[in-house]
Image 1: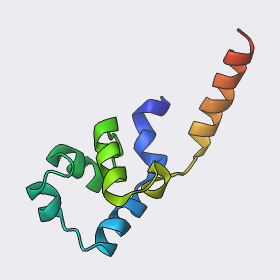
Image 2: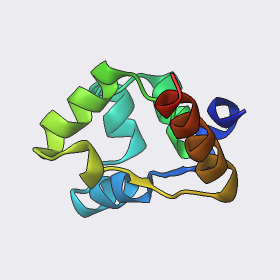
Image 3: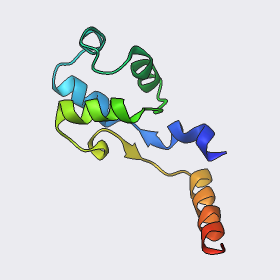
Image 4: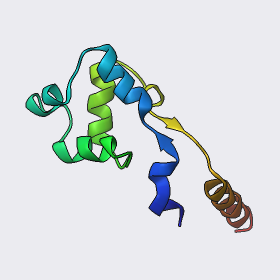
Length: 92
């Protein structure tokens, strides 16, 4: 199912590029509680299950939009899922 593999469709490289650009280290993130430890660990592992509060904090910190932090990278499975979903929605 698409929801099970969502992390493969979102690339969070931009977020870690911003951390590096601004000299923010994981210790800074933990110490200042910019985002939770569990969120940080998920992001580092490539799992982009981020709640709205964490996303809000990151956007506020960098004065940016969510698209400045992450990029959607479609794969065949997600494209098939979207196509099937649109067929269902259009047929209701």
